Length: 285
Image 1: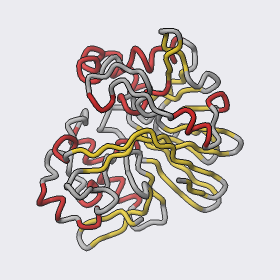
Image 2 (image 1 turned 180 degrees about the vertical axis):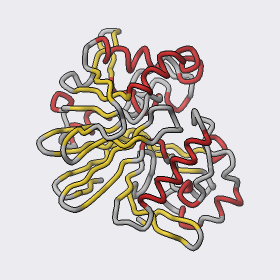
Image 3 (image 1 turned 90 degrees about the vertical axis):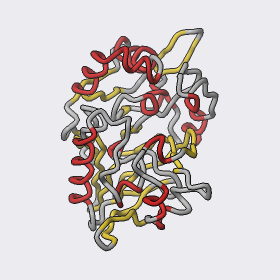
Image 4 (image 1 turned 45 degrees about the horizontal axis):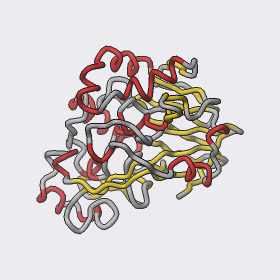
């Protein structure tokens, strides 16, 4: 799946698709709430009423730079969460087939440092975690990084040693840039936009070229139902109230505009425009 935003090309590279009960990610999304949003089917809700969640990377070509947004779960990782544990996927070969061999990547943008957004930062070589994209700068928001360094054991208990196996090797190799995720420019066409709440230093990625605009959400929005019901929070949110306020502000900013919204976890078409739907909003794909 590929999109053109002016001179910028954005390519989706899928690692894994999952079907989960809504209560696992968005506990307040009851069957009644989901049934009240009919446009979710068939792309975002399956026939059993489960949410469809995609884990993918978004690869960007801009002004001669080859950029990745989020690096999914990764292979061989020890993860207590069963769907993420010990994966053996073709992600790297799929990324290369999409035109992004790992040595060609110039920068990796991690919207935040959760398990399913940093995994392919590293790969296992002779029992050691080494940087996968060894020529790339890795952009970590400073607030985000500091939070998870301090939280260490909490992250370990829930997701496995994410910082140890997927972040620390990047820092140790001198490949990390600690940035302010509010306006940091990657190219003249690509920059970071602060969207906190899901995590303290979470950022989304803005693209603007040739009079066209797009934004990659990260986990500011997990699932399109959160445009119809922006108050649906997730147990994975560090600060649920801030996450909801950020999402509402995002909808006000981009709703009923030409800006293409590309979901980091949206299945199916993955991208669309937020349009008014009576008193609510929907993702128009």
